[in-house]
Image (cartoon, rainbow, N blue to C red):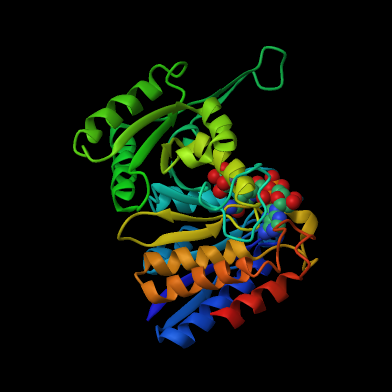
Length: 350
Ligand code: NAD
Ligand code: IPM
Ligand code: MN
């Protein structure tokens, strides 16, 4: 019996999560695994009503679960950062979810803005470090609000944090059935301390993986190659900030934010699965957004829980639905279907 914490969150989060849970139920019925969901209403509305963001008691409860399924957080009436840092980053950091796994894959039947590229060209995974870097939240203001103001935001890179991320990426590259190539995406030409550490760790750990080709790309060039020659990538490993940025670009080359899913992982421990998109407040309640990212996140969660058959079922259902050509455009308002209809289509297909 799996215990799954469900945090629908803000904006379109609840709509996406509702469709993901429909699909979870459908595959559970087919394959026989049992689960219970425990809902938490953390997000903008609760914060505005009570001042509560995410209490430590909830984190303690999450530690007892098998997985967390999150929609999105971020509310137009709440100052940026309060919910994002207070809920999403707090869960990532407190549960030590040090890997953010973000597959970039163009499904057959989906339109990509990249000319002359198809599903065989766009199929790689970004391994984003998820607990350090510029996200660590260390810094401060000096003389705030004056013309002499100083704002400092530190970038934290620990040997341990970099090494466990790089090692995970090498292992994943070994397991994947592609080019056995791992690209370190960094800015070692400018961040000559932080990314010098990344390069040294990459080289050292890489010695244990003679079967893996080691490749280096600066982050600016990475964005260029992702558009020009996405087929060159197998696995990319990168720091927290760069991983955030390049995966929104990645989402667009796989058809849009409506399909891109992610896993926040601490191998062997409770981990969190979510679409990579945000709460898209302008689409809230319109029934026009694409729930596939949230549904694919359920697929990633099942794979993580080692429910292989169920995970493959979700992936095949998404793949076959898209291959049928019915949904060509994954962008909000342009799929030709409502959010709930797309969820129903996937349920029918599993
Ligand atoms: P966003 O990802 O919410 O939306 C940007 C645009 O992407 C939307 O306007 C829409 O055109 C498209 N889009 C997003 N989800 C889609 C879907 N399921 N189907 C189709 N199209 C989709 O990014 P934003 O506007 O920069 O951020 C809005 C809020 O969400 C902010 O408060 C931000 O901090 C937060 N955010 C949260 C998460 C998270 O909880 N994981 C992630 C990113 C942003
Ligand atoms: C993401 C989001 C988050 C991030 C924000 C909302 C804190 O953009 O999951 O990609 O920057 O990691
Ligand atoms: Mn992001």
